[in-house]
Amino acid sequence: MALSRLAREFAAEINNHDWSDAPYRTDRAGHRRENDPNAGQRPPLGKVETDAVRMNVMWVVAQVLGHADPNLDEFEFAEACGVDTRTPSGRPRSGVISAGLRTDHDTGAYDVPGALAADDPNEDAYDRRPDRVATDAQRTRTWPADPKTRGFTTRRGQCVHSHEQCPKYRYGIASAERHGRRIHPIQWTTTGQAHAAGKAVCSFCWS
Ligand SMILES: [Zn+2]
Image (cartoon, rainbow, N blue to C red):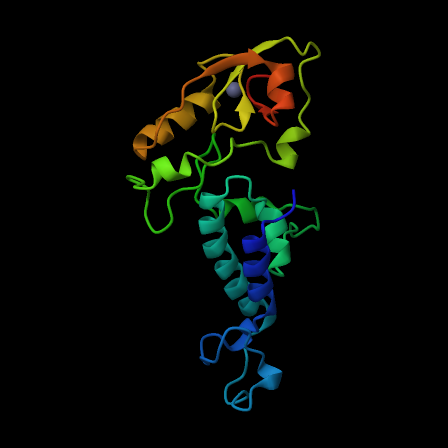
C-alpha cells in the first residue's frame, strides 16, 4: 500500500536530515553537516548512535501518522525514513519496528499520541476513518478452504475470528476497555466476504 502524501513527506524530511550531530547542533530542518560552516566543532555521532536517533524520530512520527491513518504501513514508512527494517540476520520486516509503536495487540489500533490513552477526545472524529484492513503480512495467512465458513469481524478489527472466546479477540476487548476505547460491535459474516473486505484470518482461530 502506498504511503499517504503526508507520510511520504515526513519520511523525506527525516531521511534528508543529517542526525549525526543532533545532540550538539541546532541548525534547521534539512540540516547537513557538509553544508554547515559551524560543523566539526565536536566529533559527530557514530553510525549506531545516528541510526538510533533517526529511528526514534521515525517512531514518534509514525505513532501520530498511524493514529490518524490506520492503514499506515510502518515498514514502508520506516524504510522511506532511511531506517533499516531488517533483522540482524538480514531478514525483512524486523518485529523491532512494530514493537516501537504503541498499538492495541489485537485490533492493531494505534494508541493516542501523547498519552497512555485513558481517553481519546477525538474518538468520534477518528471513528469516521475508513474501515481498517489487514497488513500484507497478515494477508499471507492461509484461509479456510470454504469461503462460506462463518466468522466475525469488527469495523476496526483487522482480522476475522471464528468464535468470541478467541483469546486474541478477548485481549483486544480487554485492552480497549482498559484504554476507555469504543468496543465496536461484532459483525457476523463469512470468511470469503471478510477476505474481500481486506481483513485477514486471525492467527489463533484458524491455525
Ligand atoms: Zn481469533
